[in-house]
Amino acid sequence: MTETPKVWRFFRAGGFDQVKIETASDLLELKQLNQKLWVALSCPVKGLQFDERTLSLIDTDQDGHVRAPELLAAIDWVVNRLTDPEILVQPQECLRVSHLRDDEAGRALAEQARQLLADLGKTEFDPLTVADVEQAQTRFMARLHTAWEDARPANLPLGEKTPDGYLTLQKVAGKLDDYYLRCRILAFEGRECAEVVTEAQHQAVFSSSSVAQEALLEWPLALVDPMGRLPLTEGLNPAWAGAMASFRTQVVVPLLGECTTLGESEWTQLKDAFAEFSAWQGASPADTENETVRDLEKLVRLVRDLLVLANNFVSFKAFYTRTGQAIFQAGTLYLDSRSCELCITVNDPARHALLANLSNICLVYCDCVRAGQKTIIAAAFTDGDSDQLRVGRNGVFYDAKGQDWDATITRIIEQPISLRQAFWSPYKKMVRAISEQFEKFASSRAKAMDDKLVSSATLTPKNAAGGTPPMAQQAFDVGKFAGIFAAIGMAVGAIGTALASVAVGLFSLALWQIPFVFLGVLLLISGPSLLLAWFKLHSRTLGPILDANGWAINARAKINLPFGASLTQLAQLPPNAERTLTDPFAETERSSWVYVVWGAVAVMVVVMLWVMRMGPH
Image (cartoon, rainbow, N blue to C red; front, side, top):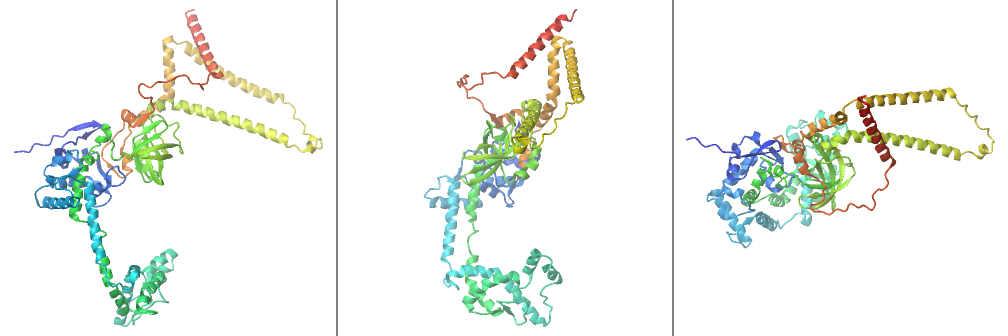
């Protein structure tokens, strides 16, 4: 009898199909789902709005990334210890002893859970939370440290200075053992077969200072002595002279007295003096954990977090359905009358921007500061325009915990934000170019006038009194100015002829054709910008932004125009808001250019009507 295949359910968002993970069966059968259909294949352990401890427990090889096989292994591990897999999809943050299986692994966890609950003054019917397990692990480590401290040796060779002396001895112990071994070899052979240094090492010492320091560290402490005596005050390797001086002062002199050489038997005596203390140090429980408590902690965390992780790894349900914050969303940035919800934390903006630029999304990098703390974010602007986005502008960033940070723009990746911005972009550039030319012209004329006034004001009294004869005034060159005026006249005539030709062609059209002419001109100017923006806006993707942050995005996670508009909210008045249109500081006087424009429009209308009237005759 053939097994019925799993019926997967998908939802379409972001331009691609994503699997729904809602039941325990969905989690259990993920290993049967082709990984080509997964949104992500790897995610970083750090830098996410997700419990870092949970991710580190799933990351079995401790390489800083959780990959698809590790997630599947975590699902199998937790299911094999629960009586009912449906516990994984129930909204709970705790575990009960009754949820554990009655097998070898389950009974060990259940016994540990009962002991833990008893230590906390609870019964085995009470729920067990992550905080309870963390507290138990802390108590376990405290008991180990207490027992270790109680086993501290009573006889310390240097008293209270024993720990410092032991560290000093450990720094040179390897080199001392190496030296005495060379001495024994030399004494045994009776000749120089125990070569102190090789020819290559000898040449390296004299090549450069940095290489010399590294090479000297490999040399013996001193010249090898067949008698096995190590000098302590002179003739030492320069790279080890400082460490040996500390060793002599802190260890040798207090235990052996003033001596200038050290034999192998005396070195053995020093090691024996610290043997008990060394064994006690080696038994330190600093990196020791109760494996059963650790497994219990892992189980409680996976029961709480596994479904959330799957819906932010295999699919991006929370992000694309807008039902919550994805684990890569760091918070919301408020800047330039907008709120940007697609914000991620980055470590190196320059390195991140190299790959993130391929996303075709306008990214704004901000330094965020709060109470001496600093973080860096990249915020995606997916609606509005970029006219007022400048490096140095300030905003406020609210992280996932609701804490507010001062945000300052430090870097911007320029990309189209909206079709509206692309339509007006050529005209804004033209106005900006004309404005810059006028500013340059006005600035140059003002500078020339200022220079003339300064030169007039700085005339010496001698010049003013007629001591120096004034320069002869240049005669008026009629031919020169006639040529200039002729050139100006020709230019004006050419412009007038061109405008007249355009007007004649325009007025020769039917009335209903004229709007299409203006529409064609608009498309001619704004068309290329609109076309380029359209292609880029429809190719915006989330992948490069997350890939640059350590993810391995497997799908083409697009951000289309409607979804982008939901990620960046523009300022709008609230519903049923009352608005007073009377502005006491509004500009009441119209500028002269407004009248000029309306006058030109009126003249064009009159001429057009006259041409239409005279046309049939």
